[in-house]
Image (cartoon, rainbow, N blue to C red):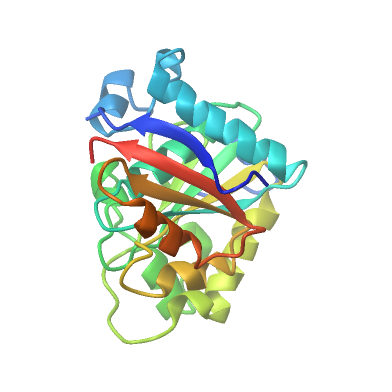
Length: 248
């Protein structure tokens, strides 16, 4: 892994169905988003390669994949504080992996208190999401895995707010979900959009099931002390670095 130095400085100016015995990279989207829709939904597009922000995400992706070697990995993306842009970074790192036609990505919205991915990506989570799976043993992974309109990128939305108190992220069902997602397809990479480090232990609990942790700091918003305290919550062997997100 890289040291806890800055991986990149990005500028936030942008505004599954399982198919047996088929690699996920061969599964086509029912309806693909246009480049204009992707920009509207704050998702980077392959057509914009060469632009600084898009290339920043591609660079971070390349570093993560190089560190992973030949293993598909689970990357936890967490903001230092609310509003730092963690969901934006998680979404676009997943999209950057999906640029590669030999790979696929699943984005899991693990911010149960303030979920946003299904709204931002205009996904109708009619079957529920992560909470449905964690709370109901009858829910299948395929029930909560949604197309996004981005080729090779699937979303598991949060699926509502917690209806009871419980340690969702340390549960057997959570580990089962992660194992199921990563083992079915060797070309699939998981991105967990985690809650802010400040205020609750959930980000640290999620880090136990992740291979890599990326911390997102609001540029000019989170202080050096804030970042250092947030980074201290994680195993240094898993900590890949800090992404500074501008215009948050």
